[in-house]
Length: 403
Image 1: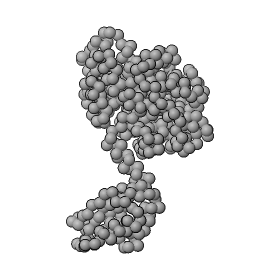
Image 2: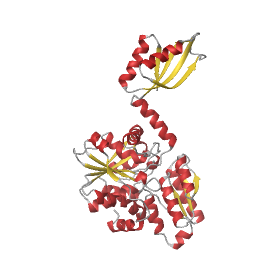
Image 3: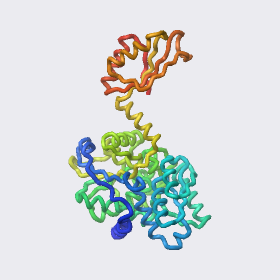
Image 4: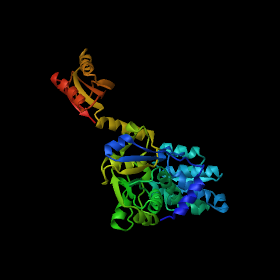
């Protein structure tokens, strides 16, 4: 693990550069989990993620020669912004290789910070290979996103800030992608608060580190696919794997559906916008992925908030349907004047607000003289939806629920 003195040095380097992000109790989440849940809100960091900590600490400690050559990095987005922000401070040219499917928000934010962005590869690991290649060809200084002692020390400063505000932490729940964050936090915690249990969380679609941890040896994944793009790392870094085996007590995994639920919970209940990788700790808590004692003090890291707006829109839409707050129906009507009004009168009586409607009389699946009306309705709950269906059945309407 990283020596605690190195993490404390990183804290001094970062003083006045980054935000000391809020670390506060989440009452609603605490009630749901029957424990004291505290959120470390790195989604509110200057670049929207904790990655600036490690990137700045590394770049600050480069030699003059390393700085003069310019830097290159591979990133799914958050490390990119950390490197770009730090490079701008030191007036260093920065080139970032990002996977082709990187959310536009992260690409644009990185460009706006002055870095040159190259989209290459289907995932982080392919972008990493391209960055190493470019580093060799153009003699650029490579800034690793997670397998570097200075980077890990920078990430470990998150733990120092938490312990300053809450001395008794029973569990810390940390996202795992490449392993830099949990290696840094684990290094600090095991030296300053060894009784604290460290729980790592991976996405099911990028779970090579969990498999490796359980098998006791590094095993690279074959592919990655998850909405948590910030932790979508396919291959296992041996350096961080060894540290994780030393400091982590348990690794659990959450699937995309559970991650989406956590994003929506944080948005609706905590008024926080958090990306997939930043929400996996909350997902693990909401879906009971590890055991803890009632009333425990549990901290989790909201590691980033740089979520693509389109992805957020999809999550909200699906969440509304799953929580019975939105109902999509296709109703068959007789295609004559007054038929649509009769239908909407029924919905009005039931206080079902129509938010979208489409009238189709030419579908090949329709009988002559019929029409399909597709409706999106705002509803209160499952009982309200059932009342609507019962009323339609009573009036003899053929209808199907759409997902």
